[in-house]
Image (cartoon, rainbow, N blue to C red; front, side):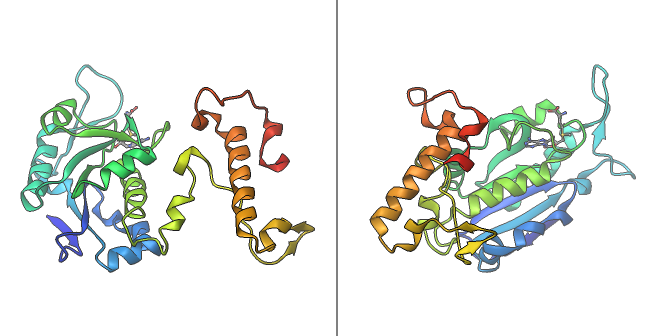
Length: 252
Ligand SMILES: C[S@@+](CC[C@H](N)C(=O)[O-])C[C@H]1O[C@@H](n2cnc3c(N)ncnc32)[C@H](O)[C@@H]1O
């Protein structure tokens, strides 16, 4: 009924996804740094297949919306059986329902989420899930952005990826985290690598100077200009200024 990967290291941060499509996992989460961290047991993943708790010979998981309207709604009794089963095997996980109407996933929220021992992530499908399961199982609703996906699985993967890469040691160097976009309210500066010149575009001389304090100052200036041009909201109300598309990075 539940699929488990890498559950040998009990202290590792854990993600459990309650889903109609368990075969989607780990999927993209098995690649690159997050995948290596999964193989190394720095985090663990398991799933519960909601269909296993469906009703009748068709294993029904949904019903028509009360009050009418399009689509289908996932049943609270079926979801309760799936969630309770998952919680019986793995206690202490924070319950989350991936939902477009939830609080927005932010860098601060990501930092908070990795402080808990792990997450139980409910992935919705169809028109969503019966409100009563959200209330009774105290699910925190989290959105990955202002758009609607076909299901919560991709949203769960985005949330898991964002969390796992913040676990100490998952990225090669913790420096990579310090200088990333949104750290210190700034977007990240532009990157360059070999060749020195490509299609008549040169790497800025300062980056080849070897002068680390000047390079840091240049990068900070680029971060500030980029943030002012693209995301003045990050800088707060005092430093906000009206921008036009011509203020963009191309003109820095
Ligand atoms: C087609 S959507 C349902 C949309 C819903 N009827 C609405 O208008 O808000 C199906 C499922 O995808 C997931 N989902 C869609 N967009 C999402 C988003 N932006 N963030 C998190 N989950 C999302 C949710 O789990 C949702 O139950």
